[in-house]
Amino acid sequence: MASVSFKYWNDCVDPEDLDAMWMEPDVRAEWIDVGETMGSKVHLSRDPDGQPYLTQTEMRAVAGIIVRRHFVSQIDSDMLCAIAELESDRQPLATSYNKKSEDVKMGIMQISPRTSEWLTRELGYRAYQVAEDPKFLYKPFLNVYLAAAYLKWISNYDQKERSEEFMVRAYKGSIKKATHKSTLPYWRKYLSVKESLPSRKAFGVGSAPNVPSSSATAVSQSKEASPVNATWDSRTSGEDMEEMWNHPDVNKEWTKSGERRGNVRLSHDAEKHPYLSRVELRAVAEIILAKHSNIKGVKPTVVCAVSEMVSMRFVNGVGQRTGLMGIDYPTARWLYKDGGYKGYMVESTEDLTKPFVSMYFGAAYMAWLSQYEGRERTLQFVVQAYLSGPQNVNLQETGPLWMKFEEALSRYEETRRENGSCIIM
Image (cartoon, rainbow, N blue to C red; front, side, top):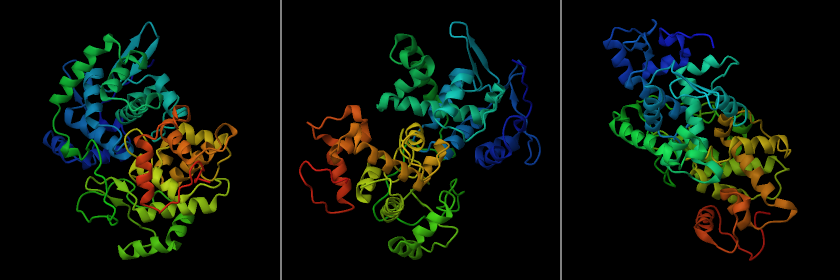
């Protein structure tokens, strides 16, 4: 592999990312203190051997920016920073080679070209362009983005919510060694490093969102920088926005909060995580199901209740689940290619953070589950299968998930339950 050399930040980040770094107060202060100026090339720090590295302040900023843009409430930025310390000592040009597996790992988070290709092609993580040249993996933002994507995949491996320990040990030694004694020392080092990290509050990245109240609908006015894609219009087609404005309840809510066509703000919680009001969520469901006849018989209220459970109406999703409906990219892509659900294009995981796209594929998956294995299924089956996978359904036990669903459903309608019938249809 040809040698790579980075002297400046400008050599290894896109202009947009460099601007984002300058916007971080601690980074800006650190850079100005050492004589850097905005508009000029920014020097990378170097160790005594001449190798470039990121300061802890810079590393925290990169992790914070990546999480805010793509993994809010899904990945902890401290986890990324601690792993970067252990894997590369924050050196963007770090390279390792495993003779046994013949695997090369590259960059701050030690991502292999093989893993990069799988994440981009199979799981749809394409927010950053990955060229045929693997040297692109040395770029800090791309490397950290792919590491976060890989950790997110681990966090829901085999459709089970995984612990932080499982994630970290699997990252180090593969899924097979997540519980093997060989990865235990790594976990202990990780805990020690994470404990010693500086506070993340300066970077505005928390570990979990605040759940919005049922009455919260308007965006609070703030002098702080606006979140990425903070408007409905940035995540919704013009046609769908027109449908939203034509919905009487939405029109009333948006007009009351002072929204204007072309620049409708998304609601945000105290930590600036975007979410939908229940009026907006129900409107999206009603519009989707009215427009797309191939999603047969799915009720808007049922879709809304599932959304409450999997995402709490957060636009980017919660935990390991992406978007309003928590639908993952492989499932959405399969529904699009093989299931005939082509109402919306889905070309990357980021597409599923668009309210209409996530709602469409979530509803499509529910419609498919309602006829799973050629049999008409009950609503209880559909809900359990959606949340846990069809192979894990146990209709003999009501369980907390079903009770939670009924509670969520009650917020949208007073339902008449027919014992043994499928009220999704």
